[in-house]
Each structure stands twice: as C-alpha cells, then as structure tokens.
Image 1 (spheres, one colour):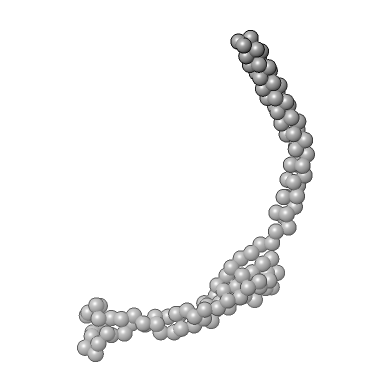
Image 2 (image 1 turned 180 degrees about the vertical axis):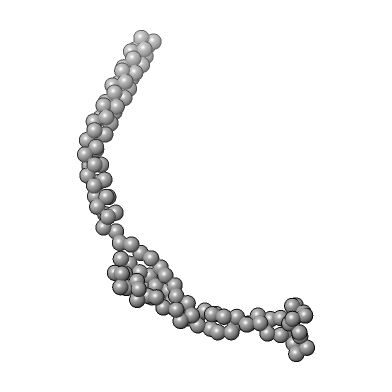
Length: 124
C-alpha cells in the first residue's frame, strides 16, 4: 500500500505542475492578445475627450444680467432657474428709545430690497 500511495502522490504533483504551467502559458498568451484592443480604446477615449462639451454655471443677482455676453460667445442655455434673494440690508432701531449710535446692541438688521437671483447652466 505504501508504494501505490507514493506513486499517486507523484502523479498528483506532476498533474498539478502541468496544470500550473498550462495556466501560466495561457495567461501570457491572453495578455499579448489584449494589447491591440487597449491601443484602440485609448484612441477612442482621446476622441471622446475632445468631443466633450464645456459646461458652466453662472449666477446673476439683484437685476444684474450679463447673460447676453455669454450667448454672443457661443454658449447655449441648458437650464435656467431663479430664486428670491435679499439684495440689500438696512439697520433699524429695535425700540423707540434705542440710539443706534450709542448702543450697538439695540440695532436690528433687516432686509431692505429683495430681488431675484438667476442661475444659468451653460454649454459650449
């Protein structure tokens, strides 16, 4: 029994060595074949980067509007949004007896003028 066991162990070792060599050789061959598609995909990536469009977001607040300058330079409006925004603030006394010059603690800051902020998403 001991002899047949040694013979089986030798065969298993030989088989495992052959299997490892086969895997190694097939993996080397696979990596060589994959080089050509990688080069082609790099060219495609470079083309897609060059064809990407530029995007930019700009905001104009409180009756400022400079969008026409961008439109003249070839930018196109993709998305436009607006929201209410406080344009100016004013300080008022908190009570009738408050002297804002002498007592800064009784001064309250309140919104004075409320306007609109426009947000544009542009693409070129």
